[in-house]
Length: 319
Ligand code: UDP
Ligand code: MG
Image 1 (cartoon, rainbow, N blue to C red):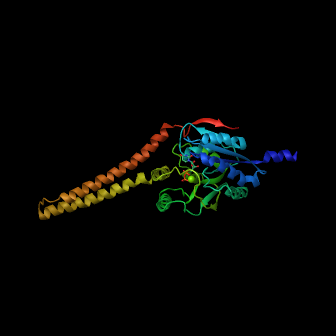
Image 2 (cartoon, rainbow, N blue to C red; image 1 turned 180 degrees about the horizontal axis):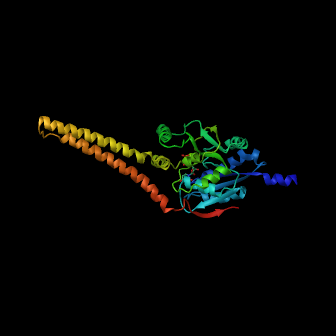
Image 3 (cartoon, rainbow, N blue to C red; image 1 turned 180 degrees about the vertical axis):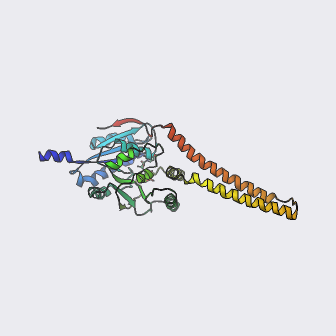
């Protein structure tokens, strides 16, 4: 009788791994995960949700094959590439575990860390963040812009996105359910994770360089990613134009007063081309930036009201 209640009480861990053109990483990833989790497989049930995010290589075939050796693997095959954020969203939707852990499939997130995360979870934390202690695998420029992003977002949004923390984390079922209730279509997961809150602790790890395949994030993608992060979690860029407009108007008013007085005192003076041009260029430049930022937000409102699904699943392979 006792054995049965124990069986029922077994907790389940769900790993969520997004795969985009990672055929050479499928086997090593699953092997490494199994080796790392071997000590706790007697205690917990395990499921590995592998989301194939529209890979163009043999990732899907490799995942199908891997299922023969790893029955815990469940494959969610997307109809096309929807991006990592969508892949993680899908993984969270399909995960049934008491704790859910999104983890990169390129072996840059060491699975050994999961044991440490589980220990914190068992001691009552609902979120265990994995923080990278170094950015040595990033280029200098990337390091600089990452730092700038965290600084800027800290100042202009009400939620604090912890620095150097990615998607690699453990989340309790409560946290996952809270995330699933957020219906927005522009999904900046880092921000959403931070927004839901919960009792949180941190474990540290070193990022290892990618062994197989290559990163699919280039500078342009990262810039858009940062833009998404800022606009999803702050309306300051929108509101700042009221004040900037006020300031420019005030400047214009003062300058106009000066010109009137000058004309009254010294009479009409023709040369004024330079000052005129400067004012026109400055004012129109400021206006264009303002319109651009309006456009950024409007575009996102457009995306939200269309209410399209975040991802489309072609096939679910597995139990
Ligand atoms: N990924 C994805 N869809 C994409 C791009 C990436 O599912 O459109 C996955 C990829 O397979 C990997 C993870 O997201 O498991 C991180 O991607 P990558 O290694 O390219 O990013 P980096 O580690 O350089 O930030
Ligand atoms: Mg990577």
